[in-house]
Length: 278
Image (cartoon, rainbow, N blue to C red; front, side, top):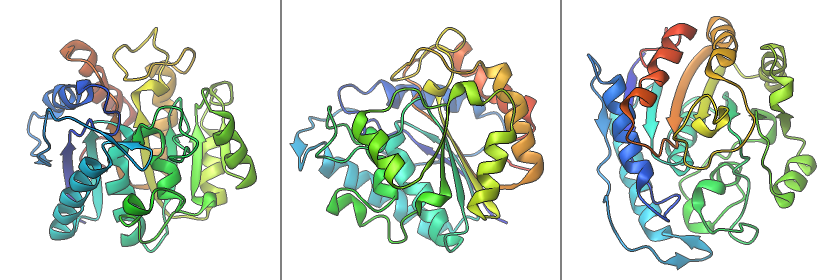
């Protein structure tokens, strides 16, 4: 199976500043020993305007097309991505869901749901809309990058603790599985969620705001509570031993602190799941 290591340092999904761009490069440095990454070249500075309720929509579409074109050339079976914002997830998740004919369970380890629409979003930042778009209910221009939307049964929100009311209502209406941080004392709830999805392939999304900010600093939108990295190790380890992980991502590091970035590859090494997969 072909593995692609992808560096996609977009920041426009947040758009208010470009810290996620520099953060992605900092994480890349922590992983880069002996690992060759395919880099998607994005503008590090540009003026963004609101279009259709989304800050920087044209730039997000341009970056997404470039990234999709590269994936379609490379045709990987597995993707490890160091991304900028959660907005980068539209690319590997949509690609792998198509590649595996919707046989893909998506574990969304995140403090936030990313389930807003341009109409419901309080900020207009696409990183808070990307999962809703992947579910087939987003902006018409950006939804074109998702030819095979996820079904709600494929998705599990794990560790969420900061949902807008509209996101909570949508998740309830669509019966999307939600596991609070208190429900992650062991791996059983996420394993049960993967089993319910009926999928044999697994995508693991890790937004670094999933972690307790007292244990890990530097996330783009930190949220109080959450697990420590040590508490997350056995969960990742169990997932890695039970399922075929075909996608793994690290996003939303908004710092240039190399010591903090070094904690991320150390976490995966302890868990037995690395950018080389198993």
